Every structure is written in structure tokens, then in C-alpha cells.
Amino acid sequence: MFSNILDNQEQNNNQKNLPILSFLNNQRKRSIQYVRFKMQTVKIYKTFAQYHVEVNEYGKIWIMEIRYSTLWQFYQKLKKYYSIKLTFPSKLLFGNLCPDNLKKRAIRIQQFLQELGSNYKLINSDECSEFLTKQQHYGTNIIDLTEVEEFLLDD
Image 1 (cartoon, rainbow, N blue to C red):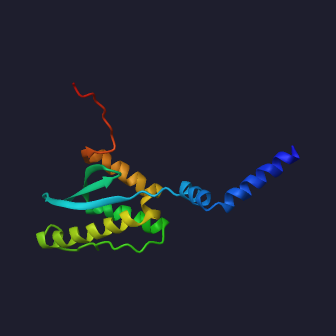
Image 2 (image 1 turned 90 degrees about the vertical axis):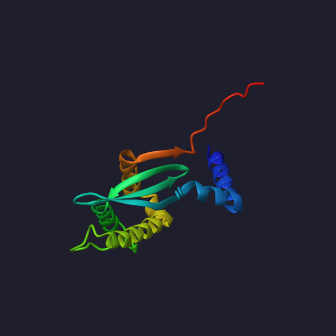
Image 3 (image 1 turned 180 degrees about the horizontal axis):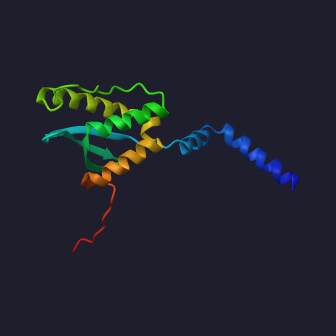
């Protein structure tokens, strides 16, 4: 039994010395998710605006339909749990539905989402996963390039 323990320790030491095994072990520990966001349109309703953002997760493309207040709450949650330095548009006291203000805000929201999508720690966080899952439930699916469909060709 003692020799088995020594053999296991020797195997572990050998694995640590092999660069490729070390690299693969480190890769297994990381779960990198890259999500891309692209602002599509802004819909203006009577009392609020809704931003339509194309989300691309692993080739699964869907439209997130979201209000500024929902994004603001999500941003505040990220700030609370992580020391982040993401750009987020400030609240407006007046002119929330003015097209010029909405355009500027949409650009800043786009910047925020791009920063979020490229921050591996945040995009892989439980808070972000929960947020995106919830938004996808309310959003519109466009295409899922991750699903594979097989079929036979007629001769």
C-alpha cells in the first residue's frame, strides 16, 4: 500500500513536469465564456424605453429586450460583489425619452455590454449567468448554431 502512494506521488510529480499536462490541467480549471453584444434598436413607449440587444453566446443568437432600470440593477449587483471598473451610463433627471439622449445612452450601454462580454471573471460569474438566463427567457431566439441536425441525402 505504501508503494502505491509513492507511485501516485511520483506520477503526480511527473505530470507537473510535463508542460502540456500542466497546461491542460489549468485549462480544465478555467471556464471561459465569450459573449458578444450588439445594440440593435431602441423602442420608445409612453413612459419608458426598451433596448433591443443582439446577444451571441457560443453561436446561440437571441435578442435581449431590456429596460435601462433592469441593466442599472444588474450593474449595481456586479459593483456590490466585484470590484469592477465598467463604464455605465448615468441616470438622467430629465429627457429620459428624448431621442438624442436615448441614442447616447444606447452607445454607452453598448460599451458597458462589450466590456462585460470581454471580462472573463464577470461573464462567468453566477450573477451574470443568472441575469443572461433570465433575459433569454424573456427575449427572442433568432438562431442556434450550436444545435446540430443530421440528415441523409437522397442518392
